[in-house]
Each structure stands twice: as structure tokens, then as C-alpha cells.
Amino acid sequence: MATATKMKSVMLSSKMLRQTMSEKGLTGTYAFVRTVTAIDELNRLRDALEVLHSTPSPNLTKEGRALRYKQQFDKAAAAAERAAMAATEALNDHEAALIRDAEIRAGLHKHVPEATQQEIRAALRSMSQEDRDRAVREAAQRGDANVIQAVRNAPSPLLTGAITAPMESLVGLLIQKTAPELGQQRQDVEVAYMHLQGATGAFGKEANAMRDPQLESAAGAQEAATKAADAAIDAAAAGSLPAA
Image (cartoon, rainbow, N blue to C red; front, side, top):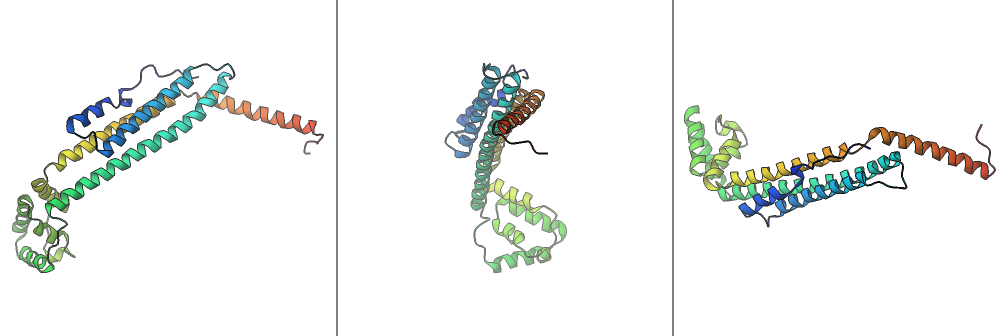
């Protein structure tokens, strides 16, 4: 069989992520706990595969051991994918909740009367391009959600006049004013995701390195040959003739 990986990647350890969580007070946050759990699961699966790879079996040939490893590798890979997907979903949900909470605090989900929005749009439409861009940008910077909502909710840009700044950047300016911690919170999510990606990649690389495709193929051919031989003997023992 292929030579086992001599040194396990540090990416399969959740220690660094646990330390980061502790420093930032995130040890009780579900998304981060789920990510640590997934990394630990990948680590356990990798260790189990290495034991299977390195432990001799008196009942199996080298081809049989290779085939057995491949079968268990497939199961472990499926389990690893499920763990990683669950953690990714938890991180995505957590980030979406952070963004929505920041938007609520910024006033982007509060009700603004339609008459107020129409008045703002009319004022913007009457300005020059330069003045309109400056007015919208300054509104975002001072935390005026009414102006941003009036622009974002406009059925057509014709109602406000063209605005060169992307809406995403204007919303970002507004949130930076009212919920400045969101940037760091999203960065924490990205760090956790990078740890998860690193562990997933390390698991796949190291577990796959212990496979031996040549012996797996030989085992498959041997298994097919023995099944055919068994079938021929069973047919003869039953007194049936082979098909013409």
C-alpha cells in the first residue's frame, strides 16, 4: 500500500481556532463551535484511516488491504463532507444574521413613509450629478437611513437621477457609522472558514495519499475472477450446464 503521511498537517488541529474563539469571546457561539467540531471530526477520521492503513491484517492480502482501505476511505470522505458542509452552513447563517442585525440597527428595515421617500428622490433628482453623489455619500456617512432607503427602494433610477456609487458601498458606509463592529465580526467568520477549508484540504490530501490505486485495481480484478470461479463451481455442483 501507499506510504502513510509521516507528519499530520497542523490544519487538522482545532487548537488555533479555539484560542481565537477564546480571545474574542466566541466560545459559546454555535457557528464557531460547529466549526471546531467539524475540524475535530476530520482529525479523528484521518487518524482512524491511518490506523487502518498501517495495521497489518493476517486475513487479508496487500491487495485486500488496499481495497478495504478504499472502502473505508469512501465512507470517511462522505462523513468529512457532511461535517464540513454543516459547519459552512452554520457560518453562513451566522454571518447573515450579523448583517441583518447591523442593517436593523442602521435603520435599513424601519418604515419610511412613501411621501418622505418621494420628497427625498425629488430633491436628489433636482441636483447635479456631482452634488447628488456627494449628498448620498454624506447621508450614508452620517447614518441617515431615510436617504439610503429612498434611493435603494426607488422603482427606477429615473426617480432619483443617476448615482455613481454602488448601493453596496453606500450601505457599507451607513453600517460603518451605526454598527462599526460588523467588519470585525465578518472577519472572524472568514477566519473560521479559512480554518475549516484548511482542515478539509489537509484531510483529503493526507487520506488520499494512503490509497494505492494499483493495488485497488488488482483487488477488483481478483474479486471478479474469484466470483466467476465460484459461480462456475456452484453451477457444476448444482448440475446445471453453462450457457452456450
